[in-house]
Image (cartoon, rainbow, N blue to C red):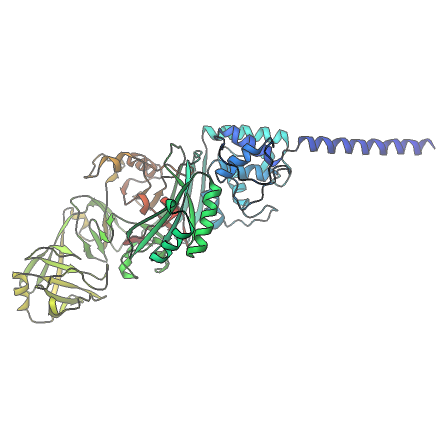
Length: 582
């Protein structure tokens, strides 16, 4: 009897303890609303004070302001059901925290590239954030990362807040991926600043007036802004700005439905930020000889980097030098053939067929030697003055434009003139396996006397003799590193390009490996961009001894193994006249 009584008392004690533990655990559980409240307050994110958008949160809810702030900034997406009073998990604590720091692009590209399979119970959209939290510095608290699916407790919330404050003082995340012939590095440092507003962007290479009119009919005409520098080749529509992310989200959904074109939401207005993102691809030119491929060799005068890469079976591609609409600015040599004129003595990068890399002045003089006639070549793929000779190559378009009727055209294949015709009787077609030599004035008269097929030899005299054997070359500038030293020459660029922070594309060389670097900018939550000196410091930190600034801004893009890795300004690829690939 006594033993039964003791067993009964022990059982009651166990049940009481279990009940007490359950109540204690419940008391220590953190709701999703409280989690967001603590994240917003700890990071000092300004509260949203405009119109509310959550219909399932009553006005007097203690965490309504935090939830509305998170929705207004896109920390919570309008497509997600929030439920502020359910218990938060450790993984959600990491997820919302990193979203609030502006780490969305890093998670997006990591999810795309990640070879590590998600074998956990975490949703796929949370898993990349979990990986970032484990691998960044400072690392997230082990109490959160060791059991991501468990309920977030008050003690763990305290650790989370300590971690957030440490991240505010500075954070670094870096991830490396190995390709077939190259190594990709992603680098992010510091927290972002929430944007002041949002715009909706559409990218199209053939935006029709009917689509624009349809959008204007279905959306407020005051929010439609059509931007297009060359409507027949590329177009961009921006809609907004919007103060609230949910409003931009709804506009994007309507816009995509009306136009059939993907709509993207981007931050609006530059704000001070410490966030910086860059990505780098490193490879040996001995093993993977880079090439320059023009849009005209594929289809069109300008194409997105991804189109050029996908049509050439490339592993990697970046944008090149400067251009104005379809006109290439600066020297461009493709397979030994000049494609465009030099722009002063600005710096260039070139390489021969063996992978030897050269950084030097990019200006040159060219001439054609035909039998006993030696004539200067004044321009490439354009013609302006009388008594001028020019070469039109197949790299820009399949026919030569702007040739005066008083010129003579000489079709050159395999180094020989095979056809001669008057320009006013010509269709100006440029052979894919050659070029068209065009002459006016006295040179046209001299060439008419030459019998066909006459041998033609193109000779290039470089300002810097080390470029004599280059097979590919592009002129850009300015040079930012030379033999390990920082360069100070401006090469004719204005102070805004030199000293303001912009998205940048850099090509560097360490003596054995080439480095293609894209530095993002103009997005306060993602990356601030870099001055030229800051870009040089990044290149030098990667081991580069020589480095050249390429075209940046909206043109800056790096494509690797099927994906645009960086986040181009506006998150839209700008069509370019040529790209570097390997």
